[in-house]
Every structure is written in C-alpha cells, then in structure tokens.
Amino acid sequence: MDTNTFAAKPDDRLPRYQQLRDDIVRRIAQGEWAPGQAIPTEAELSQFYEVATGTLRKAIDLLVADGVLTRTQGKGTFVRRPRFDASLFRFFRFKSADGQAVQPTAKVLDREVAKPDEAVRTTLGMKPNEKAIHLSRVRLIGAEPVLSEDIWLPRSRFEALATLPLDEFGDLMYPLYERLCGQIVASATEILNVGQATGDDAALLHIAPGAPVILVQRVASDFAGTPIEWRITRGAATTFQYQVDIR
Amino acid sequence: MDTNTFAAKPDDRLPRYQQLRDDIVRRIAQGEWAPGQAIPTEAELSQFYEVATGTLRKAIDLLVADGVLTRTQGKGTFVRRPRFDASLFRFFRFKSADGQAVQPTAKVLDREVAKPDEAVRTTLGMKPNEKAIHLSRVRLIGAEPVLSEDIWLPRSRFEALATLPLDEFGDLMYPLYERLCGQIVASATEILNVGQATGDDAALLHIAPGAPVILVQRVASDFAGTPIEWRITRGAATTFQYQVDIR
DNA sequence: AAGTGGTCTAGACCACTAT
DNA sequence: TAGTGGTCTAGACCACTTG
Image (cartoon, rainbow over all chains, first blue to last red; front, top):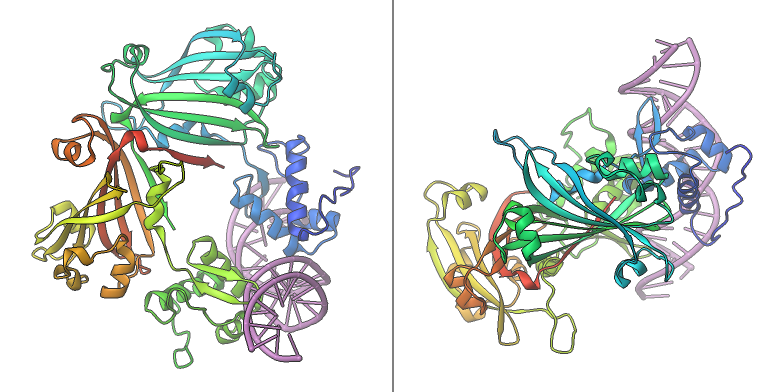
C-alpha cells in the first residue's frame, strides 16, 4: 500500500469514486488485501487517494452493495470472505427428521484428469489442449443421497487437487481451493433448468428414471472476474423451492 | 405538499435519511406523487425537510436502489411505474419461430365471485366472509397455449372487474388494475416449485399428464406493502430457465 | 481514552435537458 | 439560459468497539 501509488488512472472520464472502487478491487484481486482482513481506515484511504471522506465512502458503499466488503462500526472495513457453498439452499430445501434445516455432507466418487468439453473449456478460458480436473460428487443428508454434482477445474490452477486422495476432500470445496490452491471464489452465476432423471441420476438419487430434476449450472469466478470453476448440480425437483422478491 | 408539514416523526431514533425515505414512500402510497410523475426537485425537498442536500440524496438513493424512484440527470426524479407483468420472462423463455423473444397474449377463460381458499384469504388480509374475484387465464404464443394462470383478487378493491366483459380484459392485468380500480402494484414476491401436470393442465398446455411443470406463486402488493393480488402460474418445465448472480 | 465507521452539513462546480 | 440531477469538498459530531 505505502509503496504503491495510485498510478491507476484507468479512465479519467469516470467519476473519482468509480476509479477508487476499481483500484480497491484491483488490490483485493491481487491479494494486497485478503478476505477476512481489514482494509485501511477511511481516514487513511481518503488521505492516500487525496479525496474527501464522502467520495471515498461512496466508493466503499458500492463495494459493500456488491458484497465485496463489509463494514462494522467501530471495528473497520473488511474484505468479505465468500461462503456460498450453502447457496444451493436457496434452491433445495433439505430438512432432517425433526424438521430442522441441515447441511448435506459430500463424498467424491470419482476423479479424472481429462480434456474438458468444448463448452467447459471456453467458459473457463482454457487453452485448446489444457487438461481439466473432473470430479463427480454426491451430497448426502445422513446416508441419503440428495444431490449429484460434476465439477470441472482448470488443471493449471488446481494442480494440488489432481493427486489429493479422494477421502481427503471435505464437504466444502471452496475452503479447499483457497487452502491448497490459493484460489478464492468471489462470485458466481447460476442457471437453473428442469430436466428428467437419467438412469445414472435415478440410481444415484434414489428416484424414478424420468422423474423431474432441477439442474443448476454454476460458473464461479475469482475477484478479478476470471472463471475458475464450472459445476453442475442435479437434485430431485420435489426438494426444490425458490423465492424471489421483485422491486 | 405545501400544506402538509413533515409531521411524520415515525421514529426519532432512526437516521434522518431513513425518516425521509419513509415519508417519501408514504406520500407515494397515498397518491400524492403518482407513478410516472416527477417528485419535487432536490433543492425543494431539502428545503422542505430542512436537511442538507447530501442527506436528502441519501434517502433518494435508497428508493432508487429499491426501484421505487428513477433519476434522470437534467430532467428530474420520477416515481417508477412498475411494469413487471413481463417478469415471468425471468423464468420462462419463449421464442417465436424466428428465435425472437416474444410477449404472450392472454385470454380470460372464466371468472367467478366466490369465497377464496383460507390460504388466499389470509394472504390477502380479507375478512372471513369477504368474496374474492377468481380469474382463470391462459397465455398464448400465437395460438399455442404456454401458461395457465389463476388469479384471486379481493372484491372490495376490484369491484369493477366483477362485471367487466371477459373479452375486455387485455393482455396485461396491472394496467387494468390501475385504470379501472386505482390499484397500483408496486412489488411482488414469487415462490417457485416444480410439480407434475394435472389432467387439466395437460389438456390446456398441450403436454402429457405427469410431465414436469413449473409453478410460480406470486403475491403482489401496493406501495404501502398491502397484498392485493394472489396468482399462480403454471408452465411446461421445458420452457423454464432462470439465472442468478451471486455476490 | 483512542480509534473506527455512521451521520450530516453547507456549500461548490459539472453534465445534461429543455426552451 | 435556466433548471435539473451528478459529483465532490472539508469538515463536524455521534455511536460503537477495543484496550
């Protein structure tokens, strides 16, 4: 921070507060300020950037609205640690026997290092001959399988996962990405569709072939907006529910 | 506006800008400022409320973020006219023969004035013996039925629709509510589920009985947050697609 | 008590729209 | 040219957290 001036003038035509926002996300993307840590105080930042506190606050307001930062009065402003492995609960409502919401566990069934589909390859911005790591997972409530998942990762960023023993993958992938590969998921886009269970799905999820299933395709990206994971999740449509509020 | 002081001090503990926001939505809900019209200028409002322009702008920022107001530089700040009859396109992707996205037309099949289900009655906050207007609609692309809809409205607010000839209902309900009944839909909550087509659905939508269908339940409310419409829409799951961006 | 973010002021000047 | 919202300043004081 100290040694690095605000050289970045990406676009003088943009308002100052947008330039500030861009510079702050750049520093986060480059790891200068890490998730879970506090960024410098408003006073320090406004002095460094040579803007009034109101202008700096407006830049931070945008990042808070985007979910990149969180503010806590009296404590500081922090880079948000994204924890949306639970995001599927926005779609699938799982309950235990006593009606409580529960987190499913996960089990990696298979892993291969192979050439990805063309669609996956282009989505992840991979070179024509680059290999991908492909994981097949099942997620369970107790012993009951509820979700079936396929995950593709570019090998270049996730080399450590190519050799990790399958039983050492935990329930959550994103902490693993961060710990073993230094890859932090900052945002994601999900597309929902309805399909019918294939024979494999049916066997895995204990439903009838042809029964309706929800397909959630997710592309997850880092702070710089680069896609780093492609994932598809399938679950029985009977467990599906989603709520939207319209402005 | 001139005759009406800012008597409302709903909660002195709240920041001024939140009090301003509440007072502005109150005026909109009461019809003092109507959808499509401009509200007073920032200079007038900040003088009237006796706050600095920055404070007033923060209140308006909130309402813009909520989708209640829109600002246009050089022109003014306007009460947004909600137009989300097209919101189903967030769920169902319809295309014409040449691949263009199209708006479906609508046809009211049936209307009855009857006691609503208990669930509908309580959701709409209706008295125990109050009657509701129930409409059955089908929505079509060309001649092809794609969505089947049931709508319940409290009779007290929508009397005019109890007698309107069925062929005079247009394609869009909300402009009708506003024009004939003075009811403006300002927000809505939708819940999605997946089901299987009943015999009626199958016949109406030209799909096989038991085929997967998407059910969208919508509760629409006015500016004051009072629910005024309950609606359920059913469509073939094959036409369903939804995209979410996660922070 | 010191340090943080949260609220608010009283302006200035700029960019855009309309006439 | 007049009027609108958009940006920005240079502070002040308050509410909350931590030592």
